[in-house]
Image (cartoon, rainbow, N blue to C red; front, side, top):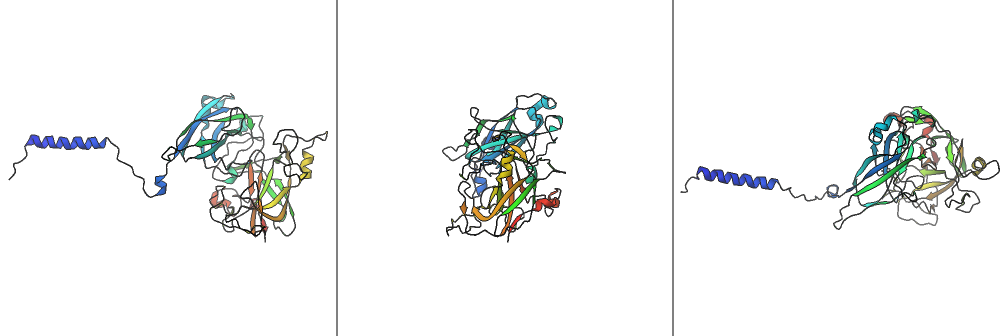
Length: 411
């Protein structure tokens, strides 16, 4: 029979066990990725500072974009993420003054995967205290709706740009040897009064019948002013200018049709057949064609095996715009002007614009509903139909506006 353990031995053994437990407690337990891909994803961050040189006051909004899918007017990309830096943090004690700055504040985007990105943003300005800016606006950025998610008159634009050329910077989040994305720090996003937005977004209503037949149809787009609840749009018209990519002071004619190229664009895009307000083959609304979707027969009788971005052939009626962009000496005005109406000719011809630089003609015009989108040279956009459609507006807490239910139909 074994003898009972003495008291001191019991205490010594207990102390050894406690010391061992405490020792293990100082070391973090190993973390092993699971089979769930969402838990096995490594991400990094992009962080830096805002630099604001402006008399405007308001929250700073910064958007993160995929560099290969830039936002309007360069492309049709939508933000991957956004962050809002409160005005109190940006301007500090100068919030109630008219000082031009510069002011600085930190920003961060977390959960960023390896890739190439650009940063754009704006100061959501309160212009009511600035006599030089009309019309007077209160901050009105609400990111959850298409009709409230872009800058208006008096807001101040910004971006991460090359300090020498002013061109947007492409930021690259790289991965290490193990494939883990590495943080990108020290990024600067600059805002300046030289990038002040001159007009409100191009909110519009369409005058005319909504059915497209076998012959071209001319749509008349007229500015629509709204001050109701969260929606505050008081555009005087549409901002239109000439394209002058080489900056030689002469309007460009890239397609050689003897008609100058305009900086404002109109896109007529096919909508999803069952999801209200959603564009076909972009069900998740990220601006990227879905991996699966409708693939229509091309004019050459082939299928490319990829979901199409179907648009209708549309062009601005040039004569009224050329008149507005011609000075008293008959010379072109190279600065954009505001026009009270747009006339858009839509042809019964469909294109697959998956590659915007080389749209491919389709054999037939797909039946269905089409949205009309206006893209100003400032990058501001407006689309009908939108969330102000009376069939949708009450459900999302927005004011119903009958004209915003318009769509073009191919029967």
